[in-house]
Image (cartoon, rainbow over all chains, first blue to last red; front, side, top):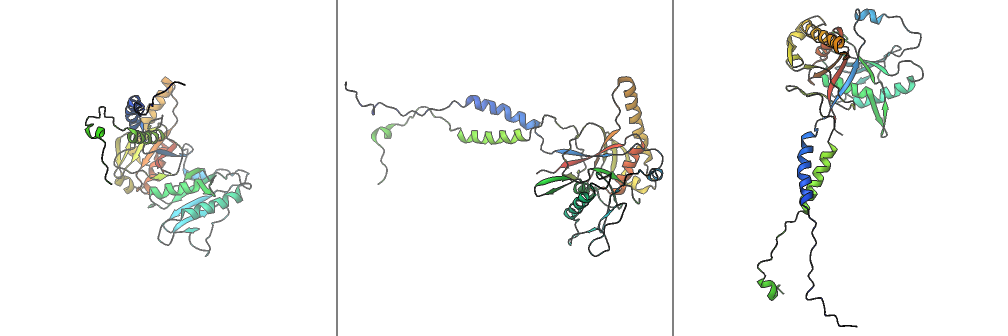
Length: 178
Length: 164
């Protein structure tokens, strides 16, 4: 075997570097492009469909009743809490008087209880009534808009054990006492 | 013992090519890129939220569509950015229907119906309502009743989607 001189002296440990320039170019173009088209605030809409107004509200109320049993579920938002009522009865709270879902101790509205109660109602009603998607929401005149929207949220869906359940997505607003 | 550089290293004052280490910069860019791609939407925004008001937040998933634009700010009710009536005067009046708003909406619905006849674009009676989060239910009901009375029964309440 021929003598092979040691390479140790002449061997240069050369670091191989990837040429980053094209990637940098790509980034410089992509990032401004995406920055301009990014949406940081997402906007949604809540759909409320009314029948086109014909006649007065009173005549609509007295429309002939259909033969199917109707639930006619309604939530009334007051400054004491939520009242839940249907064609059958008004839901009472534990003490038997006052709103169905009273305010929390600190004066905030109890949306979690409202959702849970409606979930119970929906489960009981779903086979017995024809209008288990519909709900009427009315409020006292001074109730603010955010509270109304939060109530709509609470009555639309509920999350239980990581699963989402639909409650009453078909919402109508009633004018109430204006 | 202190480090004593070898003779060669001691005189190697000119190392030749200097290369910038780009790795950390690349990391940063990658993270920004992923974040931006996540918030990228192909639709763009169909509704521009008006100034002077804060929309309420909601958990709804539904996305907006183009429709007649009705704004209820703290002081004015506006249709397509045209001030129509002062909020205080709406609240002061007794009747449920707001006359001036009804007239304004009638103008738009007449125009839309004429468009329907001549160009075949469907008049759907859709209106998007952007209300400030502090407006009262009384005001909202009055505006909505007026919309319902003037050929715009399909109302959409514009809200901010709650970020998860």
